[in-house]
Image (cartoon, rainbow, N blue to C red):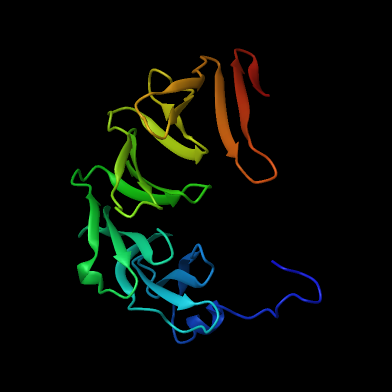
Length: 244
């Protein structure tokens, strides 16, 4: 935020206390600023059932933009300055469909990017730290696989990053010309970290292999002032547990 005598005056974009007036329950499940900082999309639940309605407001005027998106989860992300990606649920409130919405259009005309038909899996959505990609994860008890959306591309379609392999859990991040993927299974139960180039995600290189007595937690830090990979090891011995 700019500071100093020339900094613009602060102004309220959204007052949750005001929005909560007249409701027995009120919660904002997501608050997402558009890449150009001109719009905010927020997800609102007024019943406590975790079924959200999404509104888009202009950050300068406070005016609403377009029509609200109804019956969705709190997972929303911007896909450029004029598109939103969101998830809806089936009749048992399982997140099962990913949608692409263009601002100004009706929700009924939104494009379904993926439908998870296996009712043992549920969907989740997050943006990469770089903000270039959106990751869609489909996960069950001990299995997860990931799609990605390349935001700058005009043709906004999901592509497979990690395939569905039962018994393997995966998480992903992005930096530069590579995706970084952490994988866990019964075989490599302490996890391993692999990298793959953006133009060939099937070509993986193991950066941190599974180690029998070391459980490592991998944390990427890709800020402008630092670029690196943090790894914390938990070392198990017969006499105790140690952190490195």
